[in-house]
Structures are given as C-alpha cells and as structure tokens.
Image (cartoon, rainbow, N blue to C red; front, side, top):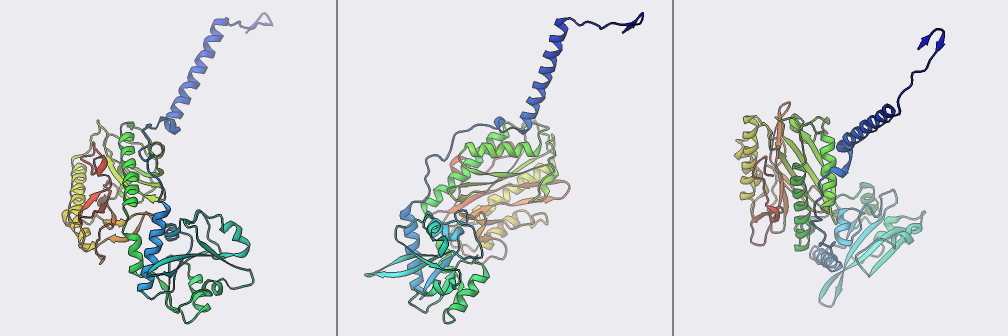
Length: 434
C-alpha cells in the first residue's frame, strides 16, 4: 500500500503461503476425483472372467457344417453355394467381413459338393482378385484343402466363378449377397439359376450346435452378471453415459466385448433411443440393453432396474411386473413344433394386447444379433430344437416410462425352451433383483 509516497509490499508469512498451496492442491485433487468418478472406467466393478475357459468353434465343426451343406446341395440338385465375407462365410469357413472388407472387386467363398465313395464332402474354393491372391491366402480359413481361383482386372470374375462348376443345377447364394454380383453370375451362365439360399440351407445355420449353445450361454450369463455388479455401483445423480461406460468395462472384465444402450426414466420409453445423458433420479428406472460378443457370437440381455432406495411410482412398478408376466407367458409357450407367431401372441395376450407393446417379441440370435427366425405375429416359422431366440416384451409410454425385460433362450433336445441365462439364475425377479 502507499504510505508517505513510498510503496511498501505487504509481507506474507511462509506458513500462510504453504497453507494456500496445500489448499490449492487439495481442491485440484477433489476436482480430479469427481472427474474420474464420472468419466473413468477404473470405477467400474471388477468381476471374474466368466468365459475364459471357452474356445472358438473348432475346425472339426466347421468341416461338419460344410459337409452338411454339401449333402443338402446334392439333395437339392444344386451346383454350388456362394457367399461374400460376412456371417454366413464366417459360419462355414471362418471368413468374416472384418477379415476382408467388401469392395467393387468380389471375393467369394464357393462351396461345391464332391462325391467321395458313397459319401459327399464339401470342396472349398475362394474366388479372389489376382493381385489380392497373396492376401487371400492368409485368410484364417478353417480348411486345409482350399483352391484359389484368381481373376485379372480385365477379366470377368463371374466367368471365373462358374468356370469349374460341372453341373447346370442352381447356384444358391447368401441372401445378403450384393445385387451386382448376383447379376454378374446370371449373365456369365444364363443356363444356371441363381437365387437366394432356400430354407433347407438356411436352417443349417438357424439350428445351433451344442458348442454354439455353450458360447451363447456364456456370453449372456457374463452380461447378466455384469448388470448385477453395476447395479450395486449406481447412485442417484449418475449420468447415463457414466453408467454405460461402467457396463462396457465390467462386461470386458467378465470376458465379453460390447456395450449397452443405457436409458434412465422417460428416456426408456423410446426402445432404440439414444438417451440425453440425464441423471438418475429416485423415481426413475434404469434400463440397460446390452449386446455383447464372444468368439463371434452375439448376446442380448435387457434389464430395467431400480436402486435400493428408489421410490418407483406404483403404476410404474405394475408395468414392470406386467412385462415380467408377458416374458414368462412367452417362454412357456415356446417349444419345438409351435409356430413362432403363437409365442408372440402369448406375450401380447398377457398384456391385454396393449397398444404400448410396440415391437415384435423377439428375434433369432447367433452370429448375427438379429437373425431368422423371428418371433412376431406374422411369422409362419415352426420352432425346432436348436433354435435360439430373444424374449423381450416391453411397455413404452412416451414421456412417462419405458420397461423392457429380455433374456434369450434355446430349444433343448426335449423340445422345451431354456433361458440362456439359466446358469446364473435366469429371468429377473424384481427391479431390485435383476
């Protein structure tokens, strides 16, 4: 301050300066802790790897799948089955779209039947652009006997694809194959019929093997265990994004990859909503719709949960238990020999055909998260042993509340439906006991 025209500096004691520095450091630490609590995955529950003992599908099963396909092609008097990299080529030969991205230059898996004595076995051929042949030969194809047919840039790949086919029977293609490839095959050999694989072929993938069932069990069980663990870490005021991050990291610890659609309160009234990153209140449900993966196989588990001190309105609780009853009605109806539409209708009847149950009951699940057959009111598919489905009724009142419960199930050898989550308790008991 100024005194007598002379500016004097106010002296601070060393103790006060140190105290201020300590206070500053403390405030920074508190801020970092708050930031970390909200955004860091390190606060996610750490649970055991539930699926560490399971291996991917083995080469012997891939060979069995292809030979079953070859025998079915003979029964249908067909020349070949063709697929681009995707889940069907993954099913038969361990070639996925992550191994080989699609472009204007087709790479095709071609499976043809060959007679070995009185038996029929599958011959595996890969059609590849010539300059990509070295890379194609590095694909993790689950066969030691693979032929490669390459085509130069000036040539027709489709002429090469049909050049070694001996028969004039139909060519069946993956239903997801791009139209320009189908057109090219048709133009190359007009005498061939080229069409999407019929049901006799599709059912080979629809009906899951014991090894597939085990993978599907584990991926769904690990997810349900993760939801239960995260529920114990939730708190009022947590953001949707933070809870979603906790779920992702907990699932990873449990041995599966993937994430969860995370919706609080009225946000859950939009079944596929993106959320608003709202915070969890005492009167809110928290909905987690999780889509994990394990060795290529997809899971699907949804829980609508509450915290121990939640004050859920009584009408919202009634909706929860009504949806639970609909889920139970569906699985009790599902069994081998039943038409799929009947299962969907059983769930709707339990909910008095509510206008707020706005989507189908369920879908097939395996290498694709959504695959045939489907559980909807118009489905004429007959349920068979080995089929796997989601069972996910829901009630959605926009602007108010959304409740969905989902467990996947399979049809066992005795024809009955069994939840894939049965090994860890299966169906939820209440919003507090998922």
